[in-house]
Each structure stands twice: as C-alpha cells, then as structure tokens.
Length: 345
Image: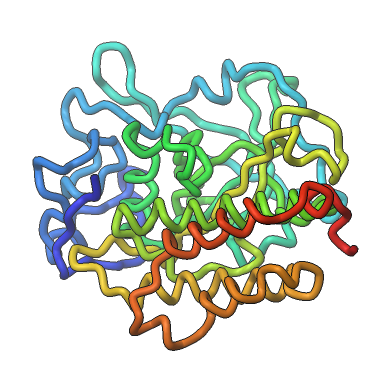
C-alpha cells in the first residue's frame, strides 16, 4: 500500500525558472534520483518531481490541476470574510490539461489576505475568473519543498484520497504565484476548499471532543500505514471543514459530519525503512495537544495521554493503532449521558 522511497530523499527549496514561469524540478532531483519505484508509483501528475521534468506527454493529473474548479465550481456558501484579514491585489497562474493532452496556463486574479494562521503557512484567498462576479474563498498553503509536493501528491492520489482516514484536506489545485508581485516570490501554492481552525467554533460536548481525537488518531494510523512521518503536529495545523449542515453551532459537529484535517505537511517525509521513534514523536505531539486541549475536562483520557506522551513508548513500539484501540475500548465503556454531556462538566 505504501510507496517505497530511497533513503536519500532530497529536501530542497522550490525554485522558479523565471524564463518559463515553470517550476524547475530537474536540477535538484537529479541528485536524489527517482524517488519512487515504477511498480509502486501513483498516477503521474503534471507537477510530478519524481520524473525530473515539469511535463510529460499525455500526462494526467490526479490532483485536479485545472481551471474548472474556479471557472465552473458548484454554487455554495463560502466562509464569511474573516474580519482579521487585510487584503492586497495579487495574481497567479493555474495550469490545466486540455483534451488533446497538451497543457495551458491561465491567469488567475486573486486577493491575498493577511491571516492569523501564520504558523501553519495557511492563508485565505479570494479567487475570481474573468468576471468580477465570479469569486469564491479558498485556503492556500505555500509549498516549501519538493518533498512536500511529493507527499501531497501521494496523499491525493485516488488510492489514498477516498480513504476516510486520510488526514490531508482534498486538493483543488496547485497554482504558481506570480513572481512579479510584491507579496509573492513565485512559490507554488496548494489550494483547498475553505477550512477553518478546529476551535473556530466551540466544542460543545464530550462526544464532539472524542470525535475530534478519534479522527486525528485515525489520521495518524493512515499516515503510519503509508510510512509517512508528519513531523510537526501542533494546534495551529488542526483544521475542520464546515460539515454538511450550515448551522454555526458548536453543539452539532457530529450531526454535521465535520471532518478534521492536518493542514500542513511542510515537514512530512515518506520513509523506506520506518523507524518507530519517528512515528512515536508524532504520537507524542498529538498526545501533548490532547492534554493541553482536553486534559482538565476529560480525565478519562489520562491513561491514553500518558501512553502517548511517555518517553518509554519510544522504545516500546507503541503505534497509533494501539492507542486507537484503547480509545475505542474507552468509548464503549462511557455512559451515554457522559458522551452527551457538556465538555466543561
């Protein structure tokens, strides 16, 4: 299931070829060789860095590179413009494959907002087409390395994307920011549907808190099965979608089927020979987050948090799947009244 990588994974800053306005992956990737084996390679993408080239003839794009998502996107209610945003004009490019297999580049007019999500490198953008009335809000994430692009492409390949435990938010596209603007330096950016910090709305009940923890643990199990070490789990990168219900009410997260995500994979690595202590560090970081967020109001989690954060588990091969089993056992023993009770009780 997991992709095999060589040990010499090359983590290099992304550079822009200002002559062609395209990412130049070939030079840095020559030093590390092809990262994936052919038999395990997920579907090729026009942003594939493993090929050492920007385009290959008749290449398909599993991450949805294209203009459709902003020219003809389904009508839906976007997130309200955050009142902490300060906007400035900007522009970028979206790349898409045409019916004959060639590739085109189209200009995208965007507005960039100064967001409070600086630690996760996430920010809000308003994307518009040719018409001023064609606008929608999206979330953008600056991509910091070729390794990060490899991880995102792998997590958004069809075999991974439709797994309900996948903790990566679905990609709409990858766009190349205009290097001529004052605010941007030509870095590519991952574009997502609007997502928000997990604590943007209050967590009302014990059940909602447990659902959040359960989804994050399932996400870690998923990453470990794919031999992906996240490397930087903290509060600011935990995001949620709006769910299937538009009500802004913290007491109905479960009925709204809210999904939680890890929105920043800057430090993530796919490893060929997984070392348990690397996975244990991810587990410890999640345990520390759980303790800081719910430790005082969910004493039932104390043993699980201790198991996740105790340095002894670095040598005892404790995995996310083990902790998930413990949490499922705990939930089965909790009275229904406790699960439905308010979190501060």
